[in-house]
Image (cartoon, rainbow, N blue to C red; front, side, top):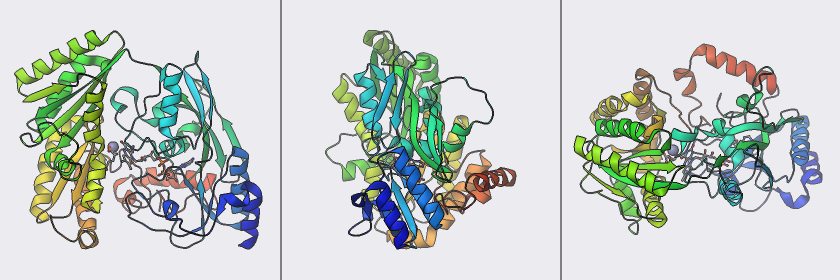
Length: 469
Ligand code: FAD
Ligand code: 2HG
Ligand code: ZN
């Protein structure tokens, strides 16, 4: 093992091979669901250094856990407890490599923090639309590794849809230079799409070419009080009809989820929380003018109030008010974490079936788990709910997880399957869902995934234990 540490130090510099001190920022996941132990945390600064690290680990038979901002939700970016895995942290690889304005693309290092990419795009007069509450610390490599979604998917798609090319260090330590800015390229299998969403199990993403869009002339945000999930679905239909491609966000938030924000972030003002079963956050982006956007948005909300799918609504008057509304939505995961350990279900269901799914599954859980508290919110425009479960009020969270997690997961995921949904919409599988995957994925699909893994990583050194278990 000493030989490996010596080689790693030679590859990235001794100060970038961490073996001592408090490494919990790299060894524990964001949700505090797992504490691992790394052989070392290695922090390369270039693609060449990543390749040298992978080659050294491959020769020593030591596995690698690629890590970006370590904000993932499914324990995918932290090592196991063996003390025999190297955490490969990409955060020193944080260069914006270049913007091609004519091609509407930006090429970046994989360790770039998402917010820095958004800001670089904006400074050049463009929009990079990927947007999520962890954007101040998550990285493009992690976004690609998980195929992250976020709050703009309804208009711009998820990370996969925003990526044109990749640079990857494979499990043999070779560099695949696939940084194409092409929008069309049918020269065989799509390796880019294979690596996107592979959660570090096939190779290390070191760079990416991403799509840019023109900055909208105006962006407006509204909050609607909504009486039921059926009403939320009706409002979504109206929003599509009235706003067309202008609809960039449609987030639903259950009353209990919002009550956690009221409880833990009393400085935030949550509209209509006390009186409404659901809140919906809508965003429209307009290429014409603010006046045009406001006219369309107000008309939409008038119709929604007339038809009764909204009982009240407020449109933000300025950017500060819009930010305040988004802040409430983005604080739900933080408020949930403050409330204590919890069970998360990042699920997708055909949008049309969401009301029936919630009605049935809410009732099922309430019947089966005494005192259960449902924290339901998410990206309704994409059919993606965060259908989360908090232990009963005042209960012992650790005991709840120990005794009930498996049962709660089975109840919810069986329902998801019945409704033709997916047990992971945007967070991935990691280790938390690896055991569940074989129950809910077709055996043929699993077999093909295993064959791909074996072909690309025959030594099983890339993030073993994640996704395929
Ligand atoms: P990490 O957590 O470090 O890693 C995630 C996975 O990607 C791991 O399997 C890791 O091995 C792999 N990986 C990391 N870097 C690389 C690389 N360079 N090459 C190959 N594999 C790599 N997610 C959403 O989809 N939508 C949301 O709206 C959203 N909101 C969030 C809000 C909060 C408050 C928090 C804490 C998280 C949220 N997330 C959301 C989850 C998380 O931010 C995303 O999954 C994000 O994409 C992870 O990026 P990261 O850099 O932190 O990756
Ligand atoms: C979000 O949409 C994230 O805020 C996190 O995907 C969801 O905490 C969660 O369950
Ligand atoms: Zn989400």
